[in-house]
Length: 168
Image 1 (cartoon, rainbow, N blue to C red):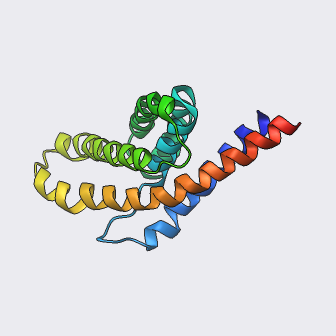
Image 2: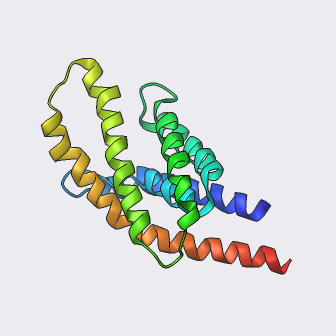
């Protein structure tokens, strides 16, 4: 149990560092993939609602500290996404990459809408079509592609940590 939590915290820190450094320089169509969102959705899909809620809060808090204008906006968004995606844990299959990618796509679209409303619409910027075509959709596609690799890695890690715990 302790190894599972420690490995999760280490993965969150590594993902945060990759998201803020490497993936900012690997932008495609002027957007970077949202690794923190993909991480929350993958963990919620694998472990359930409670883990999705807690991991979403932690990832959102890190996002708020780095990029947020108000502490708690992204923590609330990722926490909600993690909780809602945790309902799909009942249909969890290790070899199925379709459902996690679809969940990440839907979650990234909802996250983009939330970001638009809280950061742009409140300030009177009403160019939703431009924001949808230039930011939300490219980020959603890029994040879905990265999710395939991330989900495979997290599956292997989860299996390794779980098997080590059963042996002890």
